Amino acid sequence: MTRRLFSFTGRRLLFQFCGGVFAAAILFLLASSQAGQAQQNSADNTAVVRLAGPRTVAVKSGSLLEQKLDISAVAKEQITTPLLLATGSVVAHLAPGSNPSEDRWQFNTIELSGVYADWQRARAEKEFNVKRLEKIRELTTAQTQSQKLVVERLRKLVATGTEAIRDLTAAEANLLQVQLEGQKAVYEAETALTVSMRNRAALERTLLQDGVDPALLENAPSGTSLIKADVPELKINLVSAGQTCVTKFYGLPGQTFTGRVKSLAPALSAEQHTLRAFFELSDPDNKFKPGMYAEIGLGTDPRMAILVPSDGVLHSKNADFVFIGDGPGLWKISEVQVGESIGDKVEILQGLQGGERIIGNGAILLKPMLVQTLLNEEAAKETQPEGVAK
Image (tube, rainbow, N blue to C red; front, side):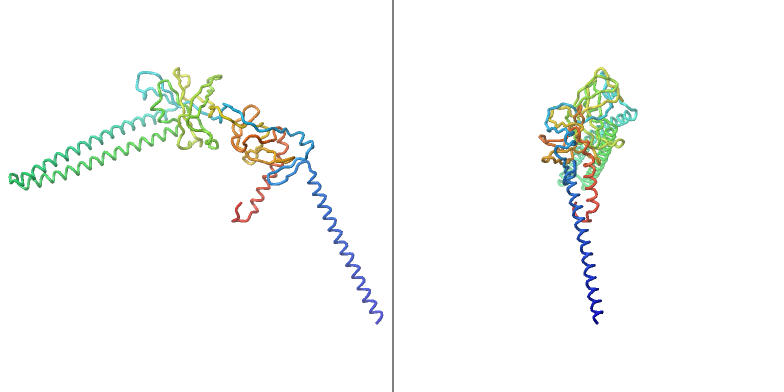
């Protein structure tokens, strides 16, 4: 009995001892884990550069990296450089002379010349049908009025008994026939006019697609060349009618010609998927041969612009970004829309207001942080539950 009791007591002590050892091991592991986490957090807080929040980068003050960052304040400047650059060409030239203008137009392609001839024919057909419809309406009105007078006269004569009723009936039938024939003639003339107008409109759209504005063809003075500029789809919001533009022809190096945008095409071109801007240049000496290529700067009117160092703009994921000061050692990643480069600077169209502190030279050193931020945002979107607004 004593042996069994001792045995039970021994086993209990053994179990308590083992349990104590196990608990101590757990506490040791927990303590080690917490110490490791604390060391990691301490390492993160002392890192030279780290992500400190959504689109926010922290750079350790006084570090060698911070010393390599060139900080500059964003300022506005008045400039006249082009808002955007586009390629273009001469599509037509109206040579001086006494002959009708339609005989003096020179085009860059035979196809465009043929479309212009068809358009001229359609205009003549439209004018003819307009006059024809007017004359048919006048004739129908005159015939109807004349037959009405005959009917009225016969009605009076029948009432007095000097004419037979059958003559009045025949006159009334003739009146109905004149009215029906007149309505038919007017309808046919209106249909012919509608068809000619549609043909002319279709040819006008073809001219626009081929690179020339029909309105300029009708109103251009002698000695004028018509120019088209192809604006990329991503920049069509930067061009508008009335803008001043400068043109430099590849075949006339060292010379610059100034014009003003007259109109914009109503649709993008089918071949290049660009928006075409049309303008004219005075060319009495026929310097600009149809088909000549040119570099065209659109939007050269004086304007206040935001210019930043080109090195301060980083490109990633089809967008451009700058680092804006957001407190001591903190830099906010901000997306911007850039314009054309001007020397070692680039114009910012959207994203900056002026007065901000940004990183110029040296911003490339923080690009890994930019890339990591964008990757984190993409990963967050992928794990977002369906139906939850992002």
